[in-house]
Image (tube, helix red, strand yellow):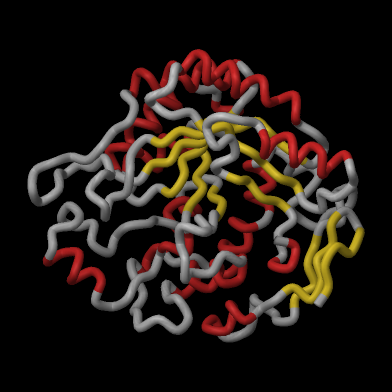
Length: 325
């Protein structure tokens, strides 16, 4: 992680259902002086669990929080994947089914209310536009705006939900590197009826979040995206160009591509905001920790197709060099 330039990172799958080993290990690393980045951990709760017991366990992991280990997220899965037929969508799939919803809107609102009351932030995987709509409604009806409740992945969004996100300080963690595919993919998806009509290549919005004043951060989804970059500069290039280097592809949904400055914002200060540490990290400013990179290429001025070539020559965390080439 340090060699790729990460100094802040939220792991979206921290509990592995049954134990707190990850929490304990991170806490021990920090106390030993070996935690050279800020690590956020989320406690996952599944719909088949006893929810009240799971929420109690999620609240209990706060005892592992340290200066550099943040433990205040609760992770849920609202639906599956749109291309896999399990995204919760409207209109329906070509064969007439709607996808999978693991929770009702009322259940999510109740969980959000209890989670926010315990000082924890919601972190919900949503893909289909119907799933997004339900989660946003749950946050609006059950959540506290100051808790920065978050939607993760977010493949499709109805226009009216952008405003609700902005009005209620709802955050987005977007897979910016998903905004690409081989040139033949939209036709294949269309011909095989894999997604509802109109969702073939209009999939992951990015620029719309910025246009609507919504705080968006980037995730890598590694290792699920095997073959795609998991480093910030590879991710940045896809967000800016809509093309994965070396892939026979043309940009998808070009009106949703980001500027370089927007991509950097999603990878830096917005991450700090999502982790509630923007007053101390995420940008270079007097009074903040000296977390920064020395990079071997100017990613703001080089050809866009070369952004992925950028590598950290050195990574500094709290003023200390923790990696160098």
